[in-house]
Length: 73
Image (cartoon, rainbow, N blue to C red; front, side):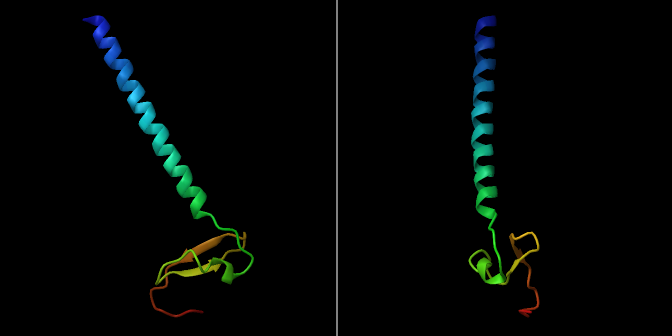
């Protein structure tokens, strides 16, 4: 009885570790895909969906700003 309980605990731990590794892998891919280097605002045009406004920030990374009023300054 005790041996069966220990094996069940080991299997539960292994399953939890596998799920955590997969979640970390997915999170790392999202972070990697979300970072776009840029030199000017035109370099960022591919990353936003409307009504977002792509801009190159001071640290040479693209950001998608909310454009609630439709103006494109």
